[in-house]
Every structure is written in C-alpha cells, then in structure tokens.
Length: 170
Image (cartoon, rainbow, N blue to C red; front, top):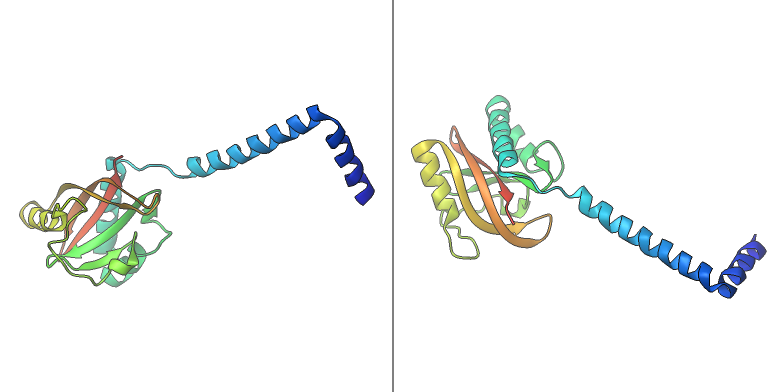
C-alpha cells in the first residue's frame, strides 16, 4: 500500500496539471466547509422573537417558574434556536433566567444599559407594567457572532415576571 501511495505521489509530482487539479479540489472542499458553517447559522427575525417570547410565556404559565427557568437557561433546547434565546426579568430588574449567558442570572440592575448608554431594562420594566407587552431596541452582544449588534426584543408580562426574546437586526 505504501508503494501505491508513493507511486501516486510521484505521478502528481511529475504532472503539474494534476497538482493544479488537486489544489483546486482542496480549495473547494475548504470553502464548502465554510459555506456549510455559514448556512447552519440562520438569522432570526423580529417575528421569530415575538413567537418565541409568547411560547416561553405560555410555558412559564403552564409549567411553573422552576421548570421554565431551567428550560430557558439551556444552551440547546426548545427555547434556544439560531440566535434566539429567552431571558426573564422580575420588576426589580433581576435576571432570573438567561439562555444566552447564564452568568447573568441573579444579577439585579433595573438601570442596565447597552454599550451606547441606553437604559433598555428600565424601558422593558416600565412598558411591561403599563401595557403588559411591547418592543425595545438596543445594542447587545450576539452569542452566535460574539459581536455587538442592534437587537429588537419583544417582552411579555407573565405574572410577576417579564419574559423576553430578541432578534439581532444587523
């Protein structure tokens, strides 16, 4: 077998056309892999975010906070698809569940701001108290790209909680 491999190597070495063909095959294989990775990531829409928030709110109502928060915090599962994830706040601004960054759970700050200084958590709380649901736009790190992007988040008041899910816009 080693002789066969060596023989093929010698043929390739002596034939420049064969080398070019093999190089092109290698390049195409590389880009096919890159394209597959890019295709695997689908950018969610605002409609997807709203549907996910409403689905999560219903799940919380039906299954209770312990089971729901555990499900919302999973990195894979029914509440984490593409670049969507659910997060849940209380009316003091405490993060109770976060599917994009579990380290945020337990942190409290109703005055959280985005990188531009926009107090988006305060707006979520105020609108949820007054209207029950709504939208807020701010900039936040996308866990799929690890870059800060514009985000549009839909939220739903569900008992003592605010269930949120947002789509990255740019």
